[in-house]
Length: 346
Ligand code: PEP
Ligand code: MN
Image (cartoon, rainbow, N blue to C red; front, side):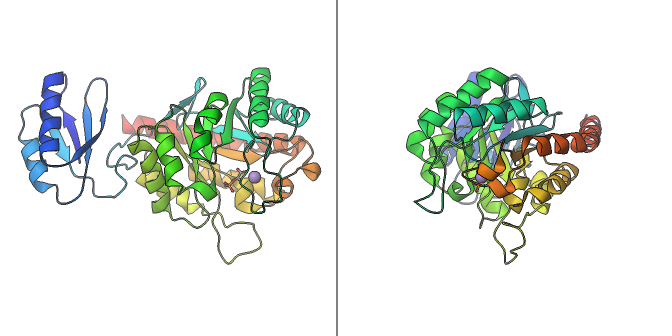
């Protein structure tokens, strides 16, 4: 249930509405807006009686029922796009944001070369895992705290914002100290203890879709983070498991269009994990732009043949630069579409 208060309602009037909602046994989960206060209330059971009672209050402009199980992430709750602010730019706004870098942070030299290279080609953010979720316990597990420090060094050298994975709720504070955006990997999309802990951090979250998760489950995971207090969530399509073996995963490209209908949250595409093959990355990146993603997260390594993880899907710096050049006309069309959308919405 979402309740919009009349303009310039007083604190007391807002509190009266909250009281009434609590009396009906529902929980207040968010109060938003500077000019107009919007109250979000959630709970079990039929809300009809509560809705009617609230709507009859003089200070209430409108009270609406949200029919979907994911409330705060839904378009019913908020029809305009959410812009997530990161270090002076926005994801979900008028700029198409490219995040790029290696799968794993491996050494100072590697991350610096990667950062300088991707920055030169137009990336806004540097990706790189310091905590790595690996299928085998014998594979490289990441440089951990040392890797985070190298990422911070690369940010200082290039001005790129940092996105890096956090795998456990006990590491959230540590990773948040160094990263600008916290990445939640596919394997952790439904780690509910972690999602709850992310609600308590002020850093934006990049939530990757689980490889066996539906779009609805992705939205429910985002709902966890928002319901626990952090509204800055960016979704990521990275391919799902199917019977197909030509690509590492099957990119559910239509999910991006579907998500744009269902949610106000920004969505980025990961063409690297979605394909597993560097030769396919540029084509999928174009598709992501055309279908209305807000950005890309791409694996780039100065020497992919020497990468400790995901070398086969990593572009080298020259290939990344070429792709960024080739994407320019597509990004121009994307911008035109965004401007038209904003004008139509006014
Ligand atoms: C990654 O980004 O390197 C990664 C492990 O991705 P995913 O969680 O999508 O598999
Ligand atoms: Mn990877």
